[in-house]
Image (tube, rainbow, N blue to C red; front, side, top):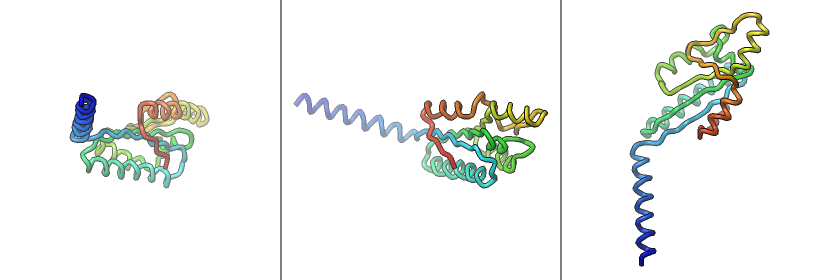
Amino acid sequence: MKRLQTLMISLFSAFFLISAAHAEGMTHKIAVHVNQNDKKVMNMALNNVQNLTKYYTSKGDKVIVEVVAYGPGLHMLRSDTSPVKDRIETMSLAMPTLKFSACGNTHRKMTKKSGKKVPLISEASKVPSGVVRLIGLQEQGYSYIKP
């Protein structure tokens, strides 16, 4: 009988905790990987961000998204070559939990190759390494998306 009471109390406690967490809404953390200089891929990444944000917020959940660009994908965050910079600006204003990270390794190599500083859009923050950033985000519980 005592075991049954303990089991019932445990089940009630678990149900209460799950109900309380769901009532407050879940937080979804998503890392989006862009490593191609392809407007279609960049737009697909941004579409993914918009669609998943719309879906989860409609359920009362919070969404935190970080787009990480490196290699040829860094063009997404370059103010001189980005085919999606206007869209990024608009989305950043509408989504305060959306962040864009530019790979410092790629930025340094592009700067060296061009012989001049490669300009980034104002919405981008430079990180030391795009790959290391993606690993760190996944270790922090971020879901990984690659369009």
